[in-house]
Image (cartoon, rainbow, N blue to C red):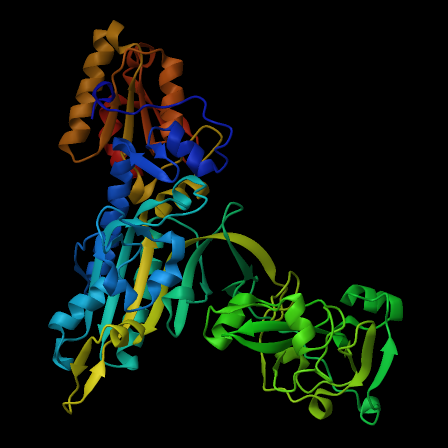
Length: 567
């Protein structure tokens, strides 16, 4: 492609509001332009790379038996209402105001299940893997970081249909391995974390993450290989031990008029923080629950969602605290609650601990010598807490690091959540009707390019290499409009490369050499071949390898062989 005929509107400067490096470089190198907040137009060179990412996705999902669909973005709302996801999606879902009953699909589990219900009738019809690469629409309240958080974007979404949990395991693992191959082919460094399924539902969920300071996810990772999204991460902290010397100590009230927080209690009475109980009252599915944590441990609400299997929860109000406990926040505890029916849960690090301190459910008073085994009826002990930096990981005890990360791909074991809601069933070998067992597997296509650029860039621009590069070679003719020799040499190289299926961008523009060099480094193609009158006198051209910065002269007759060797 001749650059004089190709639309690459490079930019020297961009808005100071654009902070993320990949966003900056996508704009500056002419890959895309913003049309509205969270809405982007892909320009030729950017779309060329985007299509290459899509082709990698197609090859790998086809390779595990995937069949490509193209499903409509316009969906009837009643399908979504059957799975209760209209409410779960909230304002994120676009509703079509001038057409009753239509929404813009943020994902396609419901539509896939709808078609499965129509045509999957027998166990003989499965397993199936159906997928598509299509635009999705989500009304992000605060679109930011370029394509990382947009309102319209491409997604590769795949769905598995199986007859059994064992079959789902096979389909899930196929996608897990395919995702690893996809990101390796794209030359992206990633790690895999356990994650919450959230509004998607299901029994198991893993995310493929890229560590990045602009990421919106927070993960706990360690050098041992442990990695988990903070919403599900655990550590190897030792639980609070039972104190043999306290077994016979009975509970006692003591005055704490100036201790309204755990820190004030610890500092004023010189108490060990792990033996001070933080008590919180949550209204879960309209019922009160008291949840106990150690000292200053933070309740992880994502874990609470998983434990109680609901999004319907909130902290109790001041009035409700008085109603259920008899005290205000800061004086609440598990002993002598005003409401004797309130259910009590505790973090697993407190399991059957004794020698504990907690609020007395009387303002300005606390209790000591609490024995959870003796004094409190705990319904269950669960992992409620958020891990913190430096805690030992569960693999070998190495310290956890808390990092920001970008979610690049997400795989879910959906189970029968959608098939039961939409009544997508099949007859098994014994003629018994059962719901189809499903999995869901997504990758944000634009995020592939953004994550690649985050990891492959220098101070001058993008550093393309491998399968995502929009072109293999950037052929740069210096003062080409002034020299017939340069024109002839460039045309010969250009035609030779093209005839041998080398994808080349030929800068034949009437522009100053410095301008061309800046554009070439900004666009960042793997190989630059620089043709100038000075080197041509010796029968040479100049080669530059973008990824290393190496430059050297090469005989013009050896150009094609060298390009093939490098690529």
